[in-house]
Image (tube, rainbow, N blue to C red; front, side):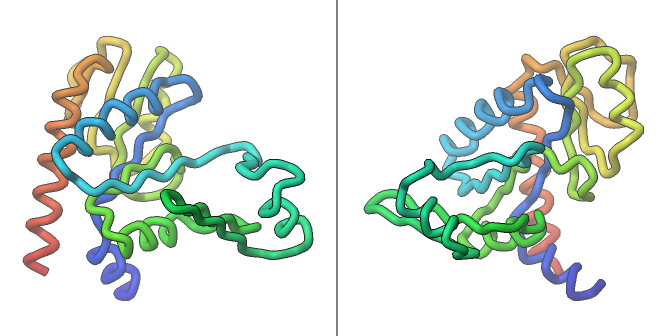
Length: 180
């Protein structure tokens, strides 16, 4: 447990965005990424895919290397690097890797069952039940008017306010980590 706590203290601020499919998570994240990038925050973004995605293209060298059995393949150009592994890497390890590369804020889309602080995105009335299924909720972003809650609730259109909320949370986390 101490090892895990020390690991979490050394990472940038992590905030998960969770919601059901087509709730607007990706669109909201893209708008927030633009704002954080504009103020110079070094970001890391992690996306969970419930399907077996494929970045590689059949017949390309990296695809052939993986098909031949290489468990890890990287490709690098003058401006980009991609790293592929033929197994799922736990979210905590992905966060650690991004922190090691200097990410100050790590935005995570998905991974509902993880315990990092979350912003829950609600699009439909039936999505509200998600609030009872996940833990560590910081705020709610909703397409619907919701009754008053004990945590902040933002409209999906309040991108600036959501940005300010996350930025404030990040600064508080940063201060707390310096004290430790």
